[in-house]
Length: 519
Image (cartoon, rainbow, N blue to C red; front, side, top):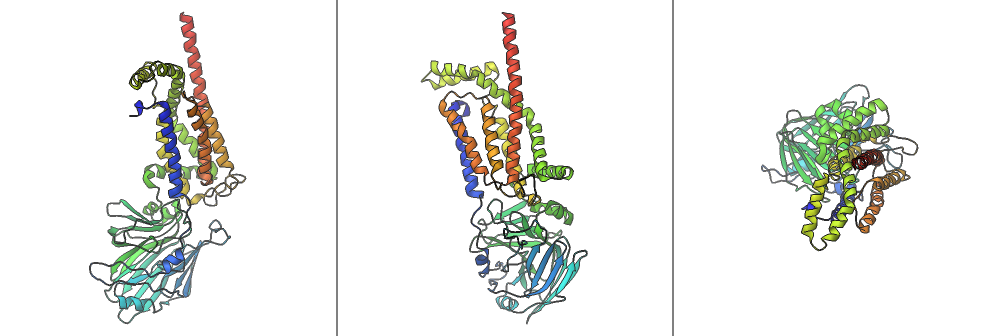
């Protein structure tokens, strides 16, 4: 199919695809207006209805006062009178909002972590009116773990929650109920800090076969059931609230609210125990708690590339000590690995450039006969060992790598608040002065200028000239870390293209000299 298209048609198709890709990406993943989470979650939410009951539990609209405070090494949490983790504030200086305030991962609205909803309507209504009693109003887990006991005495059932908090943000939850009523407990709604549309927001589950099921906001049907789940993570870009259970005993019910946000509950009858975590999706923290928790860091389709890419980036950082220069080093390593393939593509482009005049002659000679033009052009390619798709192959291979690096640099909370040099104080945010996007555009133009082409139509050149401008426009909103990667990638391409051009010219001069000597 492609070999029947003219060079101009191929270029136009490639350009249109590139532009549509970024337009689609901007439409689908660019920052969106933050959802009104307070409005969404203040509304009554229905607990999942099972086959064993037709009743629906409601979470009455109300606010509850706090009855206990947990002081961790890197966080402060509170427990409200309904036995829920009502707030979770990170203490690290890099976790601040635009007002300079420390980030709180939870909102004082339902569903909050450890909230219980009974299927029996009467019991449920009572459960949201009767306050829990805490064994202590304050515990310190800065250096060691500590347990807080919460007790709620209802008319027909008593509930005891023993929560052991740890310094790293993880906790153990053990629920004991005096009667075997059906209820649903939640790890909480996803953190609402980074509602930016750039990454997956919703629920991630690891199923019995170790495969991951991701239900993004807007995709939940509201009646899904997953059994034998060992990991249930509610996440935004950087943060998560999760349950995990090595026994794979969790039966997860998925719901949605009126704004199509995905909600998750674990169904249970009788006692319940699991481990939980609230905090950043930091690779080292999650791995230290349990190596399997790193699956909560989701990279999309190209996870098989993204995971080793992040590990390499993290390893480089351990030596360099600067995330920006670690990105530079990662980019150079990737270019070196791809160079053999890139070299073949560049040589192919040089050959096609040399054949451009002869192709023009063929087009003029057989004007009006596309079949003859195509046949003679393909013969010309075979005779000179040129591959019309040879220059595209390195680009095609870089696409999944680009996506993988994109997800790594976008999802890595390690880059949040990480400085590079001079004006770049946060690699997770866009360049405040747009210097990197502009440099990226300039280097793309230079790369384009020194890359051989076989264009025979002035329109082709005009289209190509606009590409650096289009790419610069879209990269303006990208995080500085990602733009830095693409800028360095362009510099490497320029250097490699210059080397290949010199090698090709030298070989060409030798061939001319040999022909002249032979004559």
